[in-house]
Image (tube, rainbow over all chains, first blue to last red; front, side):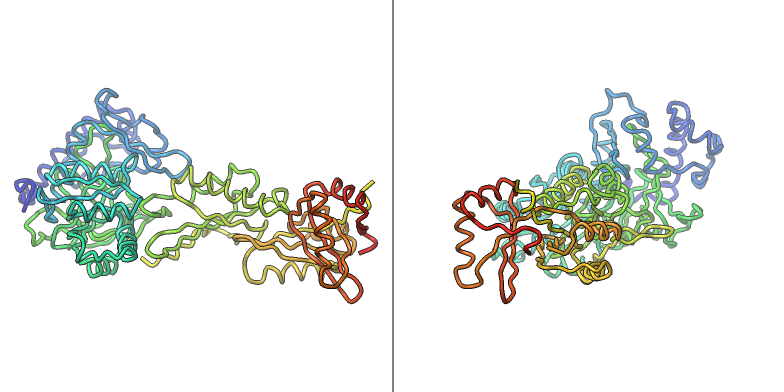
Length: 433
Length: 142
Protein backbone atom coordinates (compact mmCIF):
# COMPACT_ATOMS: atom_id res chain seq x y z
CA UNK A 1 0.00 0.00 0.00
CA UNK A 2 1.28 3.41 -0.96
CA UNK A 3 -0.06 6.84 -0.10
CA UNK A 4 1.52 8.57 -3.08
CA UNK A 5 2.80 5.82 -5.33
CA UNK A 6 3.94 8.13 -8.12
CA UNK A 7 6.37 9.98 -5.88
CA UNK A 8 7.27 7.15 -3.54
CA UNK A 9 8.23 4.82 -6.38
CA UNK A 10 9.61 7.43 -8.80
CA UNK A 11 12.68 6.17 -10.67
CA UNK A 12 15.88 7.33 -9.01
CA UNK A 13 17.05 9.47 -11.92
CA UNK A 14 13.79 11.34 -12.02
CA UNK A 15 13.87 11.86 -8.25
CA UNK A 16 17.36 13.32 -8.41
CA UNK A 17 16.30 15.69 -11.19
CA UNK A 18 13.37 16.78 -9.05
CA UNK A 19 15.70 17.33 -6.09
CA UNK A 20 18.10 19.38 -8.18
CA UNK A 21 15.28 21.55 -9.45
CA UNK A 22 14.00 22.17 -5.91
CA UNK A 23 17.47 22.88 -4.57
CA UNK A 24 18.26 25.31 -7.36
CA UNK A 25 15.04 27.21 -6.81
CA UNK A 26 15.53 27.24 -3.04
CA UNK A 27 19.07 28.60 -3.29
CA UNK A 28 18.08 31.25 -5.83
CA UNK A 29 15.16 32.42 -3.73
CA UNK A 30 17.09 32.55 -0.50
CA UNK A 31 20.05 34.34 -2.04
CA UNK A 32 17.73 37.00 -3.38
CA UNK A 33 15.21 37.35 -0.58
CA UNK A 34 16.76 36.30 2.73
CA UNK A 35 19.40 38.43 4.40
CA UNK A 36 20.39 35.54 6.64
CA UNK A 37 21.03 33.07 3.81
CA UNK A 38 22.47 35.70 1.51
CA UNK A 39 25.11 36.64 4.09
CA UNK A 40 25.79 33.03 4.92
CA UNK A 41 26.35 32.08 1.30
CA UNK A 42 28.41 35.18 0.65
CA UNK A 43 30.63 34.39 3.61
CA UNK A 44 31.16 30.92 2.20
CA UNK A 45 31.99 32.39 -1.21
CA UNK A 46 29.21 30.62 -3.04
CA UNK A 47 26.67 32.05 -5.50
CA UNK A 48 23.51 30.42 -6.81
CA UNK A 49 25.18 30.02 -10.19
CA UNK A 50 27.75 27.69 -8.58
CA UNK A 51 25.04 25.09 -8.05
CA UNK A 52 25.13 23.21 -11.35
CA UNK A 53 24.44 19.69 -10.15
CA UNK A 54 23.02 17.96 -7.11
CA UNK A 55 26.49 17.20 -5.79
CA UNK A 56 27.28 20.94 -5.78
CA UNK A 57 25.25 21.06 -2.58
CA UNK A 58 28.56 20.38 -0.83
CA UNK A 59 29.59 23.95 -1.74
CA UNK A 60 26.83 25.37 0.44
CA UNK A 61 27.57 26.28 4.05
CA UNK A 62 26.22 24.18 6.91
CA UNK A 63 23.59 25.31 9.35
CA UNK A 64 23.69 24.54 13.05
CA UNK A 65 21.49 24.81 16.10
CA UNK A 66 23.45 27.96 16.97
CA UNK A 67 21.95 29.64 13.87
CA UNK A 68 18.50 29.11 15.35
CA UNK A 69 19.62 30.34 18.74
CA UNK A 70 21.38 33.44 17.40
CA UNK A 71 18.38 34.35 15.27
CA UNK A 72 15.76 33.71 17.93
CA UNK A 73 12.92 34.18 17.68
CA UNK A 74 12.01 34.91 14.05
CA UNK A 75 15.02 36.56 12.43
CA UNK A 76 15.57 33.56 10.18
CA UNK A 77 11.97 33.40 8.99
CA UNK A 78 11.54 33.85 5.26
CA UNK A 79 7.74 34.05 5.26
CA UNK A 80 5.84 37.14 6.39
CA UNK A 81 4.11 36.84 9.76
CA UNK A 82 0.68 36.70 8.16
CA UNK A 83 1.66 33.48 6.36
CA UNK A 84 3.03 31.76 9.46
CA UNK A 85 0.30 29.53 10.86
CA UNK A 86 2.06 27.75 13.70
CA UNK A 87 5.06 27.75 16.05
CA UNK A 88 6.66 24.85 17.83
CA UNK A 89 9.32 25.26 20.48
CA UNK A 90 12.02 22.90 21.70
CA UNK A 91 14.90 23.35 24.07
CA UNK A 92 18.03 25.04 22.82
CA UNK A 93 21.58 24.54 24.01
CA UNK A 94 21.44 27.32 26.60
CA UNK A 95 18.67 29.27 28.22
CA UNK A 96 17.08 30.23 24.92
CA UNK A 97 14.65 27.83 23.30
CA UNK A 98 14.61 26.85 19.63
CA UNK A 99 11.63 28.26 17.78
CA UNK A 100 10.39 26.87 14.49
CA UNK A 101 7.61 28.29 12.32
CA UNK A 102 5.35 26.83 9.65
CA UNK A 103 3.32 28.17 6.76
CA UNK A 104 0.19 26.38 5.60
CA UNK A 105 2.28 24.63 2.93
CA UNK A 106 4.88 23.62 5.53
CA UNK A 107 2.19 21.90 7.61
CA UNK A 108 0.92 20.34 4.40
CA UNK A 109 4.19 18.66 3.34
CA UNK A 110 4.86 17.57 6.93
CA UNK A 111 1.43 15.95 7.09
CA UNK A 112 1.85 14.42 3.62
CA UNK A 113 5.21 13.01 4.65
CA UNK A 114 3.68 11.36 7.72
CA UNK A 115 0.69 10.11 5.72
CA UNK A 116 3.11 8.27 3.42
CA UNK A 117 5.02 6.95 6.43
CA UNK A 118 1.95 5.72 8.31
CA UNK A 119 0.62 4.07 5.16
CA UNK A 120 3.97 2.34 4.69
CA UNK A 121 3.53 0.57 8.05
CA UNK A 122 -0.07 -0.32 7.22
CA UNK A 123 -1.89 2.30 9.27
CA UNK A 124 -4.99 3.66 7.52
CA UNK A 125 -8.68 4.40 7.76
CA UNK A 126 -9.50 1.14 9.57
CA UNK A 127 -7.22 2.06 12.44
CA UNK A 128 -7.81 3.80 15.74
CA UNK A 129 -4.56 5.56 16.58
CA UNK A 130 -3.67 6.68 20.06
CA UNK A 131 -1.23 9.58 20.01
CA UNK A 132 0.62 9.44 23.31
CA UNK A 133 3.25 11.99 22.37
CA UNK A 134 3.02 15.30 24.17
CA UNK A 135 0.64 17.76 22.52
CA UNK A 136 1.71 21.35 22.62
CA UNK A 137 5.04 22.99 21.96
CA UNK A 138 6.60 19.59 21.19
CA UNK A 139 6.15 18.53 17.56
CA UNK A 140 5.35 14.88 18.24
CA UNK A 141 1.73 15.11 19.35
CA UNK A 142 0.33 17.50 16.76
CA UNK A 143 2.52 16.11 13.97
CA UNK A 144 1.29 12.54 14.38
CA UNK A 145 -2.23 13.79 14.98
CA UNK A 146 -2.35 15.51 11.59
CA UNK A 147 -0.66 12.57 9.85
CA UNK A 148 -3.03 9.99 11.32
CA UNK A 149 -6.08 12.09 10.47
CA UNK A 150 -4.80 12.49 6.93
CA UNK A 151 -4.73 8.72 6.34
CA UNK A 152 -8.25 8.54 7.74
CA UNK A 153 -7.46 6.86 11.03
CA UNK A 154 -9.56 7.71 14.09
CA UNK A 155 -7.26 9.67 16.35
CA UNK A 156 -7.34 9.34 20.12
CA UNK A 157 -5.28 12.34 21.30
CA UNK A 158 -4.33 11.16 24.78
CA UNK A 159 -1.02 13.07 24.92
CA UNK A 160 1.27 11.98 27.77
CA UNK A 161 0.49 10.95 31.34
CA UNK A 162 -2.46 9.32 33.16
CA UNK A 163 -1.31 5.88 32.06
CA UNK A 164 -4.17 3.92 33.66
CA UNK A 165 -6.69 6.08 31.86
CA UNK A 166 -4.80 5.69 28.58
CA UNK A 167 -4.99 1.91 28.96
CA UNK A 168 -8.69 1.95 29.74
CA UNK A 169 -9.37 4.09 26.67
CA UNK A 170 -7.15 1.85 24.60
CA UNK A 171 -9.36 -1.12 25.52
CA UNK A 172 -12.71 0.68 25.39
CA UNK A 173 -12.08 2.26 21.98
CA UNK A 174 -10.36 -0.74 20.35
CA UNK A 175 -7.15 1.18 19.66
CA UNK A 176 -5.09 -0.61 16.99
CA UNK A 177 -2.05 1.66 16.70
CA UNK A 178 -0.09 3.92 18.99
CA UNK A 179 2.55 6.62 18.60
CA UNK A 180 4.79 7.36 21.59
CA UNK A 181 8.34 7.02 22.87
CA UNK A 182 9.54 3.40 23.08
CA UNK A 183 10.23 3.76 26.79
CA UNK A 184 6.70 5.00 27.44
CA UNK A 185 5.23 1.98 25.68
CA UNK A 186 7.36 -0.34 27.82
CA UNK A 187 6.25 1.59 30.87
CA UNK A 188 2.62 1.24 29.77
CA UNK A 189 3.21 -2.49 29.44
CA UNK A 190 4.36 -2.60 33.06
CA UNK A 191 1.36 -0.61 34.31
CA UNK A 192 -0.96 -2.85 32.27
CA UNK A 193 0.49 -5.94 33.92
CA UNK A 194 -0.15 -4.47 37.38
CA UNK A 195 -3.73 -3.74 36.35
CA UNK A 196 -4.15 -7.33 35.21
CA UNK A 197 -4.33 -6.33 31.54
CA UNK A 198 -2.83 -8.70 29.00
CA UNK A 199 -1.95 -6.61 25.92
CA UNK A 200 -2.37 -9.50 23.51
CA UNK A 201 -5.64 -10.74 25.00
CA UNK A 202 -7.30 -7.55 26.21
CA UNK A 203 -6.32 -4.93 23.64
CA UNK A 204 -6.43 -4.75 19.86
CA UNK A 205 -3.16 -2.87 19.65
CA UNK A 206 -1.09 -4.28 16.80
CA UNK A 207 1.20 -1.49 15.65
CA UNK A 208 3.40 1.09 17.30
CA UNK A 209 5.28 3.99 15.77
CA UNK A 210 8.05 4.75 18.21
CA UNK A 211 10.70 7.45 18.41
CA UNK A 212 11.77 10.83 19.83
CA UNK A 213 14.51 9.05 21.76
CA UNK A 214 17.27 6.61 20.88
CA UNK A 215 16.33 2.96 21.10
CA UNK A 216 17.81 -0.31 19.96
CA UNK A 217 16.98 -3.39 17.95
CA UNK A 218 16.94 -5.31 21.25
CA UNK A 219 14.30 -3.02 22.62
CA UNK A 220 12.24 -3.59 19.47
CA UNK A 221 12.45 -7.36 20.01
CA UNK A 222 11.48 -6.93 23.64
CA UNK A 223 8.46 -4.73 22.81
CA UNK A 224 7.27 -6.92 19.97
CA UNK A 225 7.52 -10.15 21.97
CA UNK A 226 6.16 -8.74 25.19
CA UNK A 227 3.18 -6.89 23.70
CA UNK A 228 2.58 -8.97 20.59
CA UNK A 229 2.75 -5.98 18.25
CA UNK A 230 4.82 -4.63 15.36
CA UNK A 231 7.08 -1.74 16.37
CA UNK A 232 8.40 0.80 13.83
CA UNK A 233 11.06 3.46 14.18
CA UNK A 234 10.11 7.07 13.41
CA UNK A 235 12.55 9.92 12.82
CA UNK A 236 12.59 13.69 12.67
CA UNK A 237 13.41 16.82 14.64
CA UNK A 238 11.62 20.10 15.05
CA UNK A 239 14.19 21.89 12.86
CA UNK A 240 13.11 19.89 9.80
CA UNK A 241 9.40 20.04 10.88
CA UNK A 242 9.04 17.28 13.46
CA UNK A 243 8.73 13.51 13.24
CA UNK A 244 8.41 12.86 9.49
CA UNK A 245 9.86 9.57 8.39
CA UNK A 246 9.43 5.94 9.42
CA UNK A 247 10.52 2.51 8.44
CA UNK A 248 8.19 0.56 6.17
CA UNK A 249 6.98 -2.93 7.07
CA UNK A 250 10.35 -4.29 5.89
CA UNK A 251 11.96 -2.63 8.95
CA UNK A 252 15.18 -2.09 7.07
CA UNK A 253 15.87 1.60 7.50
CA UNK A 254 13.85 4.79 7.63
CA UNK A 255 12.58 6.07 4.27
CA UNK A 256 13.45 9.71 3.64
CA UNK A 257 11.12 11.13 1.00
CA UNK A 258 13.40 12.58 -1.65
CA UNK A 259 11.00 15.26 -2.82
CA UNK A 260 10.85 16.59 0.75
CA UNK A 261 14.38 16.23 2.04
CA UNK A 262 17.86 15.68 0.73
CA UNK A 263 20.11 13.72 3.07
CA UNK A 264 23.88 13.56 3.22
CA UNK A 265 26.33 12.20 5.73
CA UNK A 266 29.60 13.91 6.62
CA UNK A 267 32.64 13.19 8.70
CA UNK A 268 31.82 15.27 11.81
CA UNK A 269 35.43 16.37 12.27
CA UNK A 270 36.60 17.14 8.72
CA UNK A 271 33.07 17.98 7.45
CA UNK A 272 33.84 16.01 4.29
CA UNK A 273 30.97 14.31 2.51
CA UNK A 274 30.73 10.57 2.93
CA UNK A 275 29.18 8.12 0.49
CA UNK A 276 26.27 5.76 1.05
CA UNK A 277 27.15 2.89 3.36
CA UNK A 278 29.58 4.98 5.40
CA UNK A 279 28.50 5.98 8.85
CA UNK A 280 28.64 9.70 9.57
CA UNK A 281 26.76 12.73 10.82
CA UNK A 282 23.43 13.25 9.14
CA UNK A 283 22.97 16.52 7.26
CA UNK A 284 19.49 17.39 6.03
CA UNK A 285 18.30 19.93 3.49
CA UNK A 286 14.56 20.46 3.54
CA UNK A 287 13.57 21.20 -0.04
CA UNK A 288 10.09 22.54 0.62
CA UNK A 289 10.18 24.67 3.71
CA UNK A 290 8.77 28.19 3.37
CA UNK A 291 8.72 29.74 6.84
CA UNK A 292 12.14 28.63 7.91
CA UNK A 293 14.24 26.92 5.25
CA UNK A 294 16.94 24.52 6.35
CA UNK A 295 19.92 24.02 4.12
CA UNK A 296 22.53 21.45 5.09
CA UNK A 297 21.38 21.41 8.69
CA UNK A 298 23.78 19.48 10.93
CA UNK A 299 21.40 17.43 12.94
CA UNK A 300 24.20 15.82 15.01
CA UNK A 301 22.81 12.30 14.76
CA UNK A 302 25.06 9.51 13.53
CA UNK A 303 23.71 7.18 10.86
CA UNK A 304 24.38 5.51 7.52
CA UNK A 305 22.54 6.21 4.26
CA UNK A 306 21.28 3.20 2.31
CA UNK A 307 20.66 3.86 -1.39
CA UNK A 308 19.73 0.34 -2.55
CA UNK A 309 16.12 -0.09 -3.50
CA UNK A 310 13.92 -1.34 -0.67
CA UNK A 311 11.92 -4.54 -1.12
CA UNK A 312 8.76 -2.49 -0.53
CA UNK A 313 9.27 -0.85 -3.92
CA UNK A 314 9.89 2.66 -2.64
CA UNK A 315 12.85 4.35 -4.29
CA UNK A 316 13.73 6.90 -1.62
CA UNK A 317 17.03 6.56 0.22
CA UNK A 318 16.84 5.18 3.73
CA UNK A 319 18.84 5.90 6.87
CA UNK A 320 19.81 3.26 9.40
CA UNK A 321 18.78 3.42 13.04
CA UNK A 322 20.53 6.35 14.75
CA UNK A 323 23.60 5.02 16.57
CA UNK A 324 24.61 8.08 18.57
CA UNK A 325 25.23 11.78 18.54
CA UNK A 326 28.17 14.00 17.72
CA UNK A 327 27.33 16.53 20.42
CA UNK A 328 26.53 16.14 24.10
CA UNK A 329 22.75 16.37 23.81
CA UNK A 330 20.89 13.91 26.02
CA UNK A 331 17.41 12.72 25.22
CA UNK A 332 15.52 12.10 28.45
CA UNK A 333 11.99 10.81 28.23
CA UNK A 334 11.85 12.18 24.71
CA UNK A 335 13.00 15.65 25.74
CA UNK A 336 16.27 17.14 24.53
CA UNK A 337 18.59 18.22 27.30
CA UNK A 338 21.97 19.87 26.87
CA UNK A 339 24.42 19.93 29.77
CA UNK A 340 24.92 23.62 28.92
CA UNK A 341 21.27 24.27 29.85
CA UNK A 342 21.83 22.64 33.22
CA UNK A 343 24.90 24.78 33.76
CA UNK A 344 23.09 27.91 32.65
CA UNK A 345 20.36 27.24 35.21
CA UNK A 346 22.71 26.33 38.06
CA UNK A 347 24.83 29.45 37.55
CA UNK A 348 21.83 31.58 38.42
CA UNK A 349 21.37 30.01 41.85
CA UNK A 350 23.53 31.91 44.36
CA UNK A 351 23.57 29.20 47.05
CA UNK A 352 25.58 26.83 44.90
CA UNK A 353 28.79 26.83 42.90
CA UNK A 354 27.01 26.45 39.56
CA UNK A 355 30.15 25.79 37.56
CA UNK A 356 30.73 22.47 39.31
CA UNK A 357 28.16 19.77 38.75
CA UNK A 358 27.71 16.19 37.61
CA UNK A 359 24.80 14.79 35.63
CA UNK A 360 23.86 11.13 35.92
CA UNK A 361 21.22 9.49 33.76
CA UNK A 362 19.73 6.13 34.64
CA UNK A 363 16.99 4.02 33.15
CA UNK A 364 14.84 2.29 35.76
CA UNK A 365 11.87 0.18 34.67
CA UNK A 366 12.34 1.64 31.19
CA UNK A 367 11.95 5.25 32.34
CA UNK A 368 14.79 7.76 32.33
CA UNK A 369 15.89 9.52 35.49
CA UNK A 370 18.29 12.42 35.64
CA UNK A 371 20.23 13.31 38.77
CA UNK A 372 22.25 16.50 39.10
CA UNK A 373 24.84 16.78 41.84
CA UNK A 374 25.70 20.32 42.82
CA UNK A 375 28.29 21.84 45.13
CA UNK A 376 26.80 23.95 47.84
CA UNK A 377 28.47 27.17 48.94
CA UNK A 378 29.56 27.08 52.63
CA UNK A 379 27.25 30.03 53.48
CA UNK A 380 24.26 28.08 52.22
CA UNK A 381 24.70 25.24 54.67
CA UNK A 382 22.12 25.12 57.40
CA UNK A 383 22.08 22.92 60.43
CA UNK A 384 18.34 22.50 59.85
CA UNK A 385 17.58 19.61 57.50
CA UNK A 386 14.39 21.39 56.48
CA UNK A 387 16.31 24.36 55.08
CA UNK A 388 18.54 22.04 53.10
CA UNK A 389 15.58 20.18 51.67
CA UNK A 390 14.06 23.50 50.69
CA UNK A 391 17.26 24.42 48.84
CA UNK A 392 17.24 21.06 47.06
CA UNK A 393 13.65 21.55 46.05
CA UNK A 394 14.36 25.06 44.82
CA UNK A 395 17.21 23.86 42.59
CA UNK A 396 15.09 21.03 41.27
CA UNK A 397 12.18 23.29 40.42
CA UNK A 398 14.48 25.78 38.66
CA UNK A 399 15.86 22.91 36.55
CA UNK A 400 12.35 21.69 35.86
CA UNK A 401 11.35 25.17 34.75
CA UNK A 402 14.20 25.40 32.22
CA UNK A 403 14.47 21.79 31.07
CA UNK A 404 10.87 20.71 31.32
CA UNK A 405 11.78 17.43 33.00
CA UNK A 406 11.86 16.29 36.61
CA UNK A 407 15.39 16.32 37.99
CA UNK A 408 16.64 14.76 41.21
CA UNK A 409 19.13 17.08 42.93
CA UNK A 410 21.90 15.96 45.26
CA UNK A 411 23.74 18.47 47.39
CA UNK A 412 27.47 17.96 47.73
CA UNK A 413 30.16 19.68 49.78
CA UNK A 414 32.42 22.29 48.14
CA UNK A 415 35.30 20.80 46.16
CA UNK A 416 33.91 17.30 46.48
CA UNK A 417 32.84 16.77 42.86
CA UNK A 418 35.39 15.68 40.27
CA UNK A 419 37.55 18.40 38.72
CA UNK A 420 38.70 18.04 35.15
CA UNK A 421 41.87 19.07 33.45
CA UNK A 422 41.05 19.61 29.82
CA UNK A 423 37.63 18.57 28.58
CA UNK A 424 35.16 18.12 31.42
CA UNK A 425 33.16 14.90 31.51
CA UNK A 426 30.20 15.99 33.53
CA UNK A 427 27.71 13.47 32.20
CA UNK A 428 27.43 9.85 33.25
CA UNK A 429 24.86 8.17 31.04
CA UNK A 430 24.30 4.78 32.64
CA UNK A 431 21.35 3.81 30.45
CA UNK A 432 21.88 0.63 28.52
CA UNK A 433 20.06 1.40 25.30
CA UNK B 1 21.71 36.59 80.99
CA UNK B 2 21.42 33.28 79.22
CA UNK B 3 24.68 33.61 77.26
CA UNK B 4 26.67 31.23 79.45
CA UNK B 5 24.13 28.47 78.88
CA UNK B 6 24.60 28.50 75.11
CA UNK B 7 26.46 25.35 74.13
CA UNK B 8 28.26 25.75 70.82
CA UNK B 9 27.56 22.79 68.63
CA UNK B 10 29.36 22.20 65.35
CA UNK B 11 27.32 20.96 62.40
CA UNK B 12 29.25 19.47 59.53
CA UNK B 13 27.86 18.71 56.07
CA UNK B 14 28.63 15.22 54.75
CA UNK B 15 28.21 14.02 51.18
CA UNK B 16 26.19 10.85 50.96
CA UNK B 17 28.82 8.42 49.74
CA UNK B 18 31.03 5.77 51.29
CA UNK B 19 34.15 7.10 52.97
CA UNK B 20 32.93 10.65 53.53
CA UNK B 21 32.48 10.23 57.30
CA UNK B 22 35.98 8.76 57.54
CA UNK B 23 37.30 11.81 55.71
CA UNK B 24 35.60 14.15 58.18
CA UNK B 25 36.80 12.01 61.10
CA UNK B 26 40.36 12.18 59.77
CA UNK B 27 40.11 15.98 59.63
CA UNK B 28 38.87 16.04 63.25
CA UNK B 29 41.82 13.91 64.25
CA UNK B 30 44.35 16.02 62.36
CA UNK B 31 42.99 19.11 64.08
CA UNK B 32 43.18 17.31 67.43
CA UNK B 33 39.49 17.80 68.13
CA UNK B 34 37.84 15.64 70.76
CA UNK B 35 34.12 15.03 70.59
CA UNK B 36 32.03 14.76 73.74
CA UNK B 37 28.85 13.82 71.97
CA UNK B 38 27.69 13.61 68.39
CA UNK B 39 24.96 12.35 66.16
CA UNK B 40 24.49 11.95 62.43
CA UNK B 41 21.28 13.02 60.78
CA UNK B 42 20.71 11.67 57.32
CA UNK B 43 18.41 13.01 54.70
CA UNK B 44 17.87 12.26 51.05
CA UNK B 45 21.30 12.50 49.52
CA UNK B 46 23.33 14.06 52.32
CA UNK B 47 24.08 13.86 56.03
CA UNK B 48 24.76 16.30 58.85
CA UNK B 49 27.17 15.44 61.64
CA UNK B 50 26.35 17.38 64.80
CA UNK B 51 28.99 17.38 67.51
CA UNK B 52 29.78 18.87 70.89
CA UNK B 53 33.55 19.29 71.02
CA UNK B 54 36.27 20.69 73.25
CA UNK B 55 37.10 24.27 72.26
CA UNK B 56 34.47 24.67 69.53
CA UNK B 57 35.90 28.05 68.42
CA UNK B 58 39.27 26.56 67.51
CA UNK B 59 37.63 23.49 65.96
CA UNK B 60 35.42 25.71 63.79
CA UNK B 61 38.38 27.75 62.52
CA UNK B 62 40.54 24.73 61.75
CA UNK B 63 37.85 22.72 60.01
CA UNK B 64 36.83 25.73 57.92
CA UNK B 65 40.45 26.17 56.89
CA UNK B 66 40.37 22.61 55.58
CA UNK B 67 37.45 23.50 53.34
CA UNK B 68 34.88 21.56 55.33
CA UNK B 69 31.40 23.04 55.54
CA UNK B 70 30.88 23.66 59.23
CA UNK B 71 28.45 25.82 61.11
CA UNK B 72 28.15 26.82 64.75
CA UNK B 73 24.74 26.44 66.32
CA UNK B 74 23.61 27.16 69.86
CA UNK B 75 22.07 24.19 71.62
CA UNK B 76 20.88 23.68 75.15
CA UNK B 77 22.24 20.99 77.47
CA UNK B 78 20.39 19.71 80.47
CA UNK B 79 21.39 16.95 82.86
CA UNK B 80 19.31 13.79 83.11
CA UNK B 81 19.32 11.10 85.70
CA UNK B 82 20.65 7.89 84.17
CA UNK B 83 17.75 5.61 85.01
CA UNK B 84 14.36 4.67 83.56
CA UNK B 85 12.17 7.76 83.44
CA UNK B 86 15.15 10.12 83.24
CA UNK B 87 14.10 11.49 79.84
CA UNK B 88 10.48 11.76 80.91
CA UNK B 89 11.37 14.10 83.76
CA UNK B 90 13.10 16.60 81.50
CA UNK B 91 10.84 16.14 78.48
CA UNK B 92 7.81 16.90 80.62
CA UNK B 93 9.32 20.15 81.87
CA UNK B 94 10.29 21.18 78.34
CA UNK B 95 6.83 20.30 77.08
CA UNK B 96 5.05 22.10 79.90
CA UNK B 97 7.18 25.18 79.19
CA UNK B 98 5.79 25.01 75.62
CA UNK B 99 9.23 24.68 74.02
CA UNK B 100 9.38 22.94 70.66
CA UNK B 101 12.45 20.74 70.16
CA UNK B 102 13.85 20.71 66.61
CA UNK B 103 16.21 17.86 67.24
CA UNK B 104 18.13 16.38 70.12
CA UNK B 105 20.55 13.70 71.20
CA UNK B 106 22.04 12.41 74.41
CA UNK B 107 25.32 11.49 75.97
CA UNK B 108 25.82 9.33 79.03
CA UNK B 109 28.72 7.81 80.94
CA UNK B 110 28.95 6.08 84.31
CA UNK B 111 28.28 9.20 86.30
CA UNK B 112 26.06 11.45 84.28
CA UNK B 113 23.76 11.81 81.32
CA UNK B 114 23.14 14.96 79.30
CA UNK B 115 20.47 15.85 76.79
CA UNK B 116 21.48 18.26 74.01
CA UNK B 117 18.75 19.84 71.96
CA UNK B 118 18.11 22.64 69.53
CA UNK B 119 15.14 24.98 69.69
CA UNK B 120 14.18 27.96 67.62
CA UNK B 121 15.01 30.61 70.23
CA UNK B 122 17.60 29.09 72.58
CA UNK B 123 17.85 32.13 74.81
CA UNK B 124 14.10 32.34 75.44
CA UNK B 125 13.96 28.59 76.09
CA UNK B 126 16.76 28.80 78.66
CA UNK B 127 14.96 31.60 80.48
CA UNK B 128 11.77 29.55 80.60
CA UNK B 129 13.58 26.45 81.87
CA UNK B 130 15.46 28.40 84.54
CA UNK B 131 12.21 30.04 85.62
CA UNK B 132 10.62 26.66 86.34
CA UNK B 133 13.70 25.55 88.27
CA UNK B 134 15.30 23.29 85.66
CA UNK B 135 19.06 22.96 85.84
CA UNK B 136 20.72 23.98 82.57
CA UNK B 137 24.38 23.12 81.93
CA UNK B 138 27.04 25.61 80.96
CA UNK B 139 29.97 24.99 78.61
CA UNK B 140 32.32 24.19 81.51
CA UNK B 141 29.94 21.67 83.03
CA UNK B 142 29.75 19.32 80.06
